[in-house]
Image 1 (cartoon, rainbow, N blue to C red):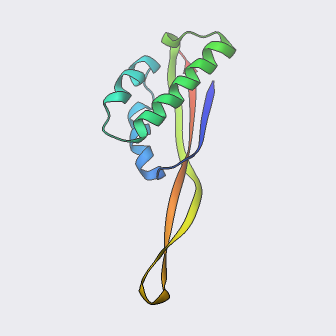
Image 2 (spheres, helix red, strand yellow; image 1 turned 45 degrees about the vertical axis):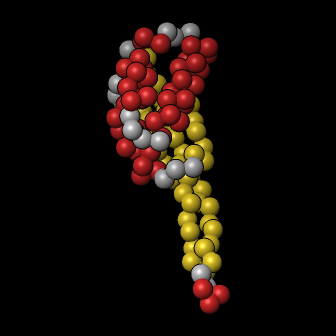
Length: 108
């Protein structure tokens, strides 16, 4: 009962703030709390949690009421390297970081 989101275009440090709020909670409670969080990553994690619930219902025949968020981990993904041109022919690096989010659901 897993779901992955790879190369989500936001820094892992910011996504972990949302992930920490739903870790260990029941799925129904987590799904009801996520839309009210004032973070951009909340919508992506809600979509990923819906996907994990659908995987559990389809593959393992488990109802949504019996599930909880057993593990959620946010790791570093690839870093897109860009540069900002400056005066006198110089260029400064810009690192656009991505995240890998993994949700594992457990059964009560």
